[in-house]
Length: 128
Length: 226
Image (tube, rainbow over all chains, first blue to last red; front, side, top):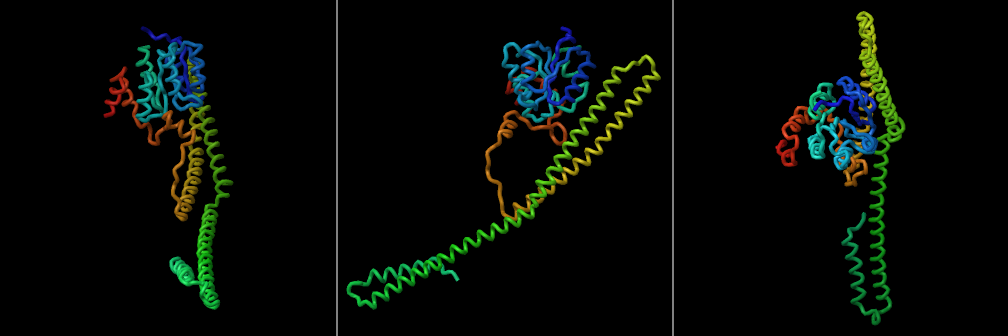
């Protein structure tokens, strides 16, 4: 099934610069409808009112981390199937395992480049 | 010279034992007075040595406190808290400001170029060259931030040396303490932060995990790390 490039994508990070970078990369890839949130709590609230086709989230945020957001999303009947990619500086094995166990679809360690982001989105959503 | 505790105890014991053995009723008054005098001498000796012992202990404590005060003065705590640490904080604030400003410049130039009109190649080349120059100039932030960070590192090393010398001089060891709320949250949320020399697990290894076991169970995941 072709990827709907107009689907809303949610980028979650407490650093405005990182949101800007990921947003620019997604636009370059052809995604048209990109929203953002500054932490997991804000993101989860936005997800209650919007059907996002993809969530790209950082890990270390306050008051709710990306890891907590992932677990909340997977525990929510309405949201649990939402594709979720973690983009984070957390690179220890325990982090990757915990995220995998919590149901993340893919995991990108910072710093990353456009090719890596495209590759992981393709792995999760399919070719576009 | 302070008598040994055993010697004092023996004297008192001896005086009391003498009194017990003697029948005060039948003794002449002179002998009773003599025995009382012996007991009084023994008690005087006991309290005298006690004073010496207590005095010695207090003097040791006073000397230790005096030495600790000297060590704390050598720490120069007022200089550290009043100048060095606030100075380091200001430097780090400046690093954040400088990097934010540079990032803003570079990203704005890049975004502008991505939307630039390419119909006129010459004009476009001129626009690109100008934008590249501004981006290159913005990269000079690295020189300033490097200097600022070095100053902060110097301050931290200074504090480390002082604290190490202090704890060594006083023979201080770390005591067990409870985790703070922040430490508990960091541990529970696996907040380790960026690794010093780059990611601990490379992207290729992470990709291998997700490719080989897209719907892995915990056992499958664990097996990948055996």
